[in-house]
Length: 304
Image (cartoon, rainbow, N blue to C red; front, side):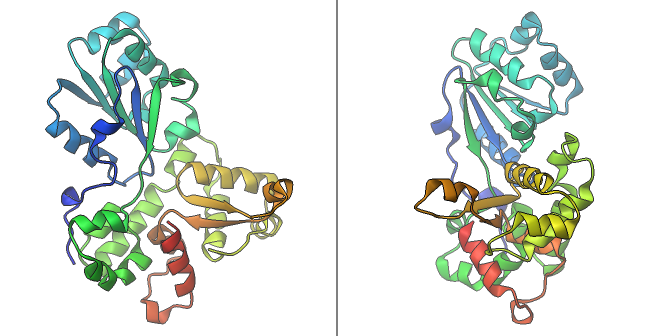
């Protein structure tokens, strides 16, 4: 089955419903899930006068990082909307956006970014009360209904279970292409936000932790056991797990108890945001009839 990602209607559309004057719409999520594509599609259809810039543009980076009121206000003069893609690249971006929404009457602002936004705290405190956040995820089955019916999706269930639903993976036509794309996403992007901010000095224990969790999808996890197997202390394991949640790699499900105190301290289960990245971490792309983890794949798929 072939897909055209630019034809898939995402559940977040239309973006107009999230926009408010003098507030910042922050679209953030894992890298490579289609944030830029959605933003460009929205801007192509808007009637408002807008400025689109990119966080890796050195000129824009220096201008906004300077926090110079005059320079920043002249930068957005006469525009009704400002959009910045990959805004996490810009130092002091939260403070710069605060200047814009506080000083320019009626302006609408959209910024996209990876989970670096969350990890670095760049837009938290500066934009308190001035932002709306929109988490963005890999493609959901309901979003694929814009192109295919339930039977067609069911016929391709094996591919979703094994390779996941990152847009580029869904678009890839052959099994070899899907493996190449999801492996590249996992190797190059999955942990980039954590490592860029030097929150984790060594990637090896982090990858080892993810691989252990990949084999325990749906099972209760003991932090002590994880720490022992990796050779690090429990506090470090807890810190890594917290970072992996914020980086849109893992989802934690706590235990249930009628005693709320016990519920907080009970063991948890961890799921992956995407089946494909889970399988890439353990280098396992065999067909379903050659696997012994079909139950785990199905449980993770249904959960996400």
